[in-house]
Length: 179
Image 1 (cartoon, rainbow, N blue to C red):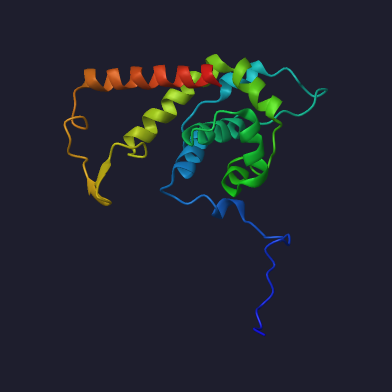
Image 2 (cartoon, rainbow, N blue to C red):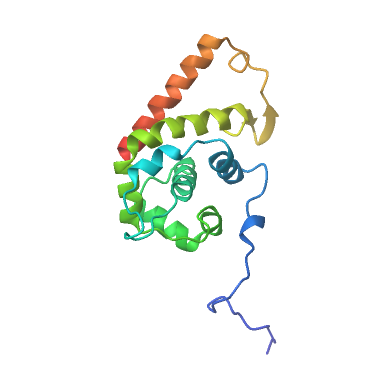
């Protein structure tokens, strides 16, 4: 009879994770985290919170924005799926600082702060697009990747850039409304 090593795939594991080391430079999740932390002015959110010293502590808008922007980049629009990802997905855990907001908190944050989030969403998309993190920079023929950054679309005028910005703003509005 063959002697095999035991299969422990049904057993739980405790894995030590250093949150700061999980977001790798050059990835979309790192870019989102960096942009939210260093490039966006989130002071507009302060006036929208009224919990002072006597209310329950709220999740920082930076954490909520990171997980929402990353979820949207993956096409994840459901608050319940975002909540589950914050509990099970290491990348979401890192972006949220291991906070796990309830799906109702996520949904109400998006619904109540839509006008504040929308311009930030567009700003993040524009920065990611400038950094080349949003598609259209290569195409594949029979599995062979060929760089295509010299296309006419990439070398345009200021008017074309403005139209691209308006298109991204419309897309962000549609995504927020779908959510």
